[in-house]
Length: 548
Image 1 (tube, rainbow, N blue to C red):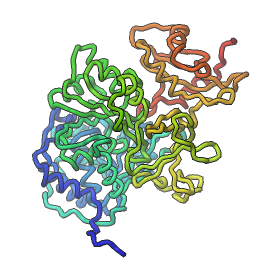
Image 2 (image 1 turned 90 degrees about the horizontal axis):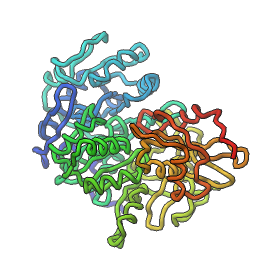
Image 3 (image 1 turned 180 degrees about the vertical axis):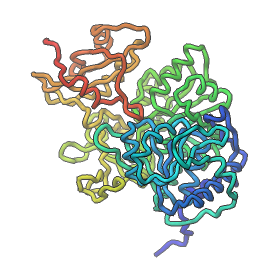
Image 4 (image 1 turned 135 degrees about the vertical axis):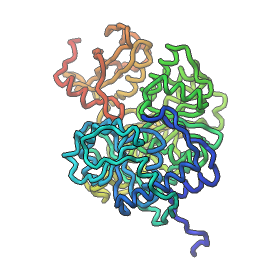
C-alpha cells in the first residue's frame, strides 16, 4: 500500500525560497576584501542569487557542470552555494590552502570549466593556469573598482556580471539525489578524493544539524562560522542558518584574526560560533592579552581535531561559554556526533561535565555507528572496548568521485554491509558518547598494547607553557614501538624533557608515558590545520630512543 503524501523533492533552492518569505529581514554580515563590513538581508540575498543563476546560464554552464570556487566565508560565496546548486550544477568548493599541485589536480579531476575566485587567491590561479587545460572562465569576486591587475586573459568581474542580469529566475525541480556539492578530502597520502553531496543529503544534514540536541539553530541566534566554507560546507552552517532564520556573520579572509573575530562577536552580538581548536586557542589568547571578553557568545563549537581540555575550561571560566565538541569527516557531510548532556546528568559535577565535553559527543539521528575488532566483530558500547569506527546514514558517502562505489572494491570506502570505514579507532560509552582514541594509522602498538597518541597529546597541551604537541610511534628494540612526544612551547617559555615528563606523570598510565620528549619551533600542518603526522614521521625517520 502506497501512502498519499506529496512527493516533493528536497531541493536546496527550497531553503532559499523559504528564507526569503519567512525571514526576509534577517541580516547577513560579511567581511570582504573590498568591504570591511558588508550588510544585506535575506530578501536582497535571494534576489542576487537569482541574478547569479542567470549569469551562470549566460556563461554557458550546463546541468551537472562542476562550478569551482576559491573563496572565503562571505556573502558572495553564499550566493554561489545557492545559485549553482539551485540551477542544477555542482558547487565545487576548493581549499586554497592546499599545495598548488593538489589544487591543480582537484580542478582538473573535477573538470571545472568556470571558476569563481576571491581577489586574494587570484595569484594562485594565475600561477596554475597553464596546468588547467579545461578551465575556460575565471570570475573575480569583487566589483570593478577593486578588480586586481592580472595577466589572465578575459578575466570577468562578479558584480558587473550580476548587474547586467534580471533578478527573475524560476528555480528548476529535479531528482533530489542529483549532485549539489563537491568537496575533496585533503589526506596526507595519495591524491585528494572527491566527495559528492546531493540535494537530499544536504537538506537532511541541515535538518538534523538544527535539532536542539545538535546545534539548536534558530531565528533567535546569531552564528559566526569560522570554519571555512571551502571545507565540508562550513559544517552545514550556510544551509541550517538560512533554513531557520539565523543571522549569519561571515569573517571572510579574517578567520584567524583575533581582533576581527572579537569585534564581530561583540558588535554583531554573536551567540554561537564554530571553528577548529587552533582558532579558539588563538582567540582565547588574544582576549586574555587584551583583557577583553565576549559576553554574548554562549556556545563555541569545536571540530576538525580533538579539543584540548584547556579550551573547554578557559571558555567556561573566562567567558561563561559552553564548548560543544563534535566529530565528523568530509565523507559524513560532516555531522556525525555532537556533545549534549542527557536527562539524568543534571547533577554531574563541573569536572564530570568537562570530561564529557572532551569526548567527541553522541550520535545524532541519521547516523548509525559501530566499533569492530580486527576480525570485524562488533564490540560493546561499554566505554572500555575500542576498535575501528564505522558509520552509515543518508549523508554519508558511498564512494569517491571517479572511483568505484562497489562495496569490497579496493577504491570503495564502504564494506559489504554498507558501513563506511572511517579510519578512526574509538570507544563508545554506555550513554552513547564517542571517544576517538586515534587514527588507525596513528595508534601506537607497544608490547601488544594499543596506545592512543591523542590521549598523550591532550594531556601535554594542558601544560600552560605548551602551545602544541604531537605524538608518533617510533621503533623500540624491546617494545617494537614506543611514543615520542614532540612539543612546541608557548612564546617566551622554556621547558626541558624532565619538566614535561614530570607534568605527565600522574595523568597517563605507565605504558602511555612517552619514552622521550623533543622540542621543535613549529609542527608541520596539513592544509586544513591538522598536525601532519606523516611529515613528523619523515622528520624523525632515523630517530632512536635514548638508552634506558
